[in-house]
Image (cartoon, rainbow, N blue to C red; front, side, top):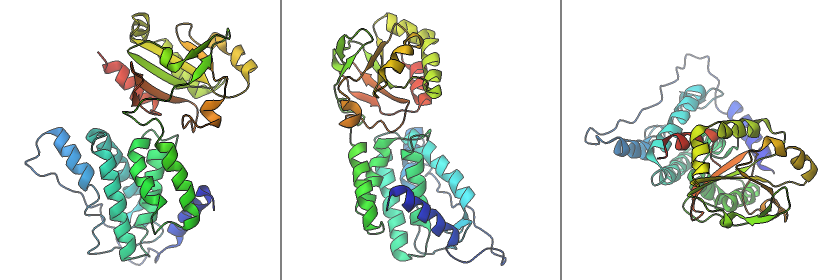
Length: 316
């Protein structure tokens, strides 16, 4: 069974599980977790919230109703909003705390599933975690945060055996070019046929931009970067380089699009097709943005454009 089929099956199960509302049942509010008064620093409060956000909701001492619109007694729409709030908390907690918090979430929902297999908590929050942290269209996507969760799914007793190879593949993909590791080097050709390498680019920062000709979202990023005065100054001062890479095979179409690309960028294509065919990078969707430092250490991986632009606004 493919993953998409499994997710569809899960969605169907969520619709059909448990008794229907309409018998006087009132959903409960999402049980909030308070921050101890002693934690006055914002970073400490965010770390505490990230670790304990789901404690009350996943307390197995009492299980609540599961039906087409409620998850452990909480309206699904309300739970969705709380999950978006959780994403904001993870962002504030940062990379040293968030992966452990997400791993803790998986342990908590697994305990609920073990307590009562009729509960829809495991399926619902697994689905939301995958959609928010790994869907290429999610503004919250973060493979480093998702990695400990999908590692757990890949050997969870509550995941069908036929699904585990798909999650094992995702583990391998999320492990590529992680934040804090050196990015994989590769060769590229410019429009004149000259060959370069990623590691041959000398700049304090490198924006690695996987794009396609005719991609509207790519054009929006191109325009935003090209019209940003700070970006222009950083490029002129040699502090920033933009490497715009095409990894598919329609080179005629790519060359026709060349006037769109700024001359101050490195604009090239992968002549060896190693990026896609050898999965040197996990380019699941175009556009895809990475931020590297001078040593080609990954600072951001497949970053939503808003995250990169925020960094550009604030870098000194």
